[in-house]
Amino acid sequence: MEFATQTTTDGATRLTVDGDLTIYHATEIRQRLIDGIRSGPVLELDLSHVGEMDTAGFQLLALAKREALRLDHALRIVGHSLAVREVIEFFNMVAFFGDPLLIPANERA
Image (cartoon, helix red, strand yellow):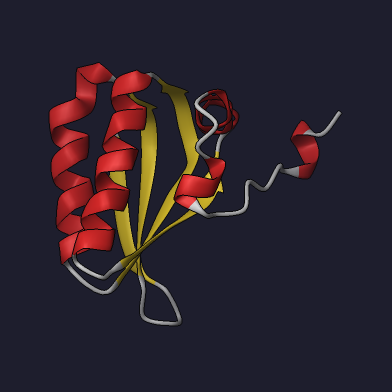
């Protein structure tokens, strides 16, 4: 599991997750998400490099979204891997997260 943080041109913090959003990394992921949300008013979460996501990973994203709302901060998912899209769509939670699910050209049928 790897994380990279950078500041975007509009001042948001972008957290890129490279690895699996699964129960095996839940403690580390949870802390990174919470720290990212609390660090500033906008956290952009790039999940385009996530290879696998289970229900624990989904629950962590939901927790992060609720924490952002509680603090009146914004959480934007700016990259969705196929695994992330499948889980969010399976639970019918696209509207909850409120971010467009963009499908990269190389994944279109």
